Amino acid sequence: MAENARDIADALRKRIRSGELAPGVRLPGEPALVKSYGVAKETARRALMLLVSEGLAVRRKGSGTYVREFQPIRRVANRRLAQEGWGTGRSIWSSDVGERPMQVTDLRVYEAPAPTDVARALDLTEGTPVIVRDRLFTVEGEPVQAAVSYLPADLVRESPIAQEDTGPGGTYARLAELGVKPVRFIEELRSRMPSQEESERLRLADGTPVVEIYRTALTAQDMPVEVNRMLLDAGAYVMEYHITG
Image 1 (cartoon, one colour):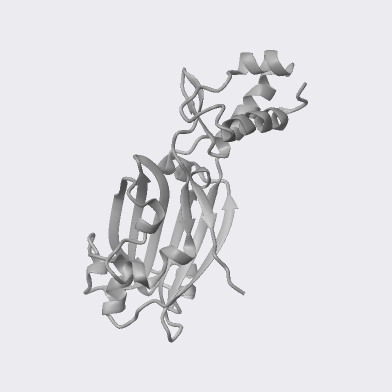
Image 2 (tube, one colour):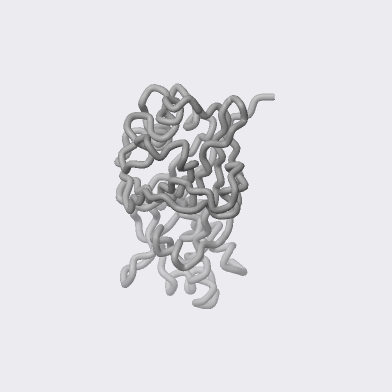
């Protein structure tokens, strides 16, 4: 008999990863788990929620818990930021999702005073105007990432970066045209629980964490030209890094 929710989740996870429980299949419900494992209903509920929080399952109100059909996005930071991608007019996202349908929604582009942390990262005086690009990315209809980019307004105000459509290659290609091509990137990652507003925007199940990434883009002269704050559905991503010694 399983002693706790994690034991049950481990057993179900193995069945999912082996293919015994295929994508879209309904998982055993709480009554079935109570009967099979001899545990309390609350323990069975927590076991299912563990799988939901890991991105392996989804709950459908009034129907049950199902193996998630959405395949995780493999985010290869080294590859997605390479100049041979955006420098040839391709979207950074194309390296992540390939041919999977991707959309940018809730896009807002505006000018505002730089917040304290952004001003510090961009070597600006607090309150200096920045162009803000706030958007939501969906893949196969599911919101997977919210992102807010900040760029010095005096640098990009007259460029397509200040418009909704930045053109082929996106923001980094336009920065290159302005003579401030990004050649180095710094990313800081941390995992945390989202706020209520963040959960609603990403349509996260209860208990699902997010991965927060702060990326700073720098030129060959180490001039910071963009700060991008990204919030990822932790259950929708696999992070991959290629490191050479």
